[in-house]
Image (cartoon, rainbow, N blue to C red; front, side):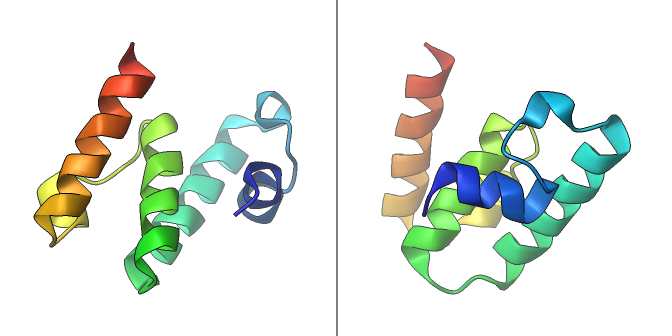
Length: 82
């Protein structure tokens, strides 16, 4: 999963600074829908990580059934918050 490709897919550009607030909200909503429908664990995790970076990720207990996935997400959160 290429980050720039994902930004272009959900936001129409790889330059998020150029996305107006309404475009950002719409892109995040599309990403949240995709996350909810995604069944591939690695892709689902990647989408959750992007949503987390954008401040729109669902809570871990809602996002991941598997404890290992929740722990991996906590690790990502810790790394990004440093």
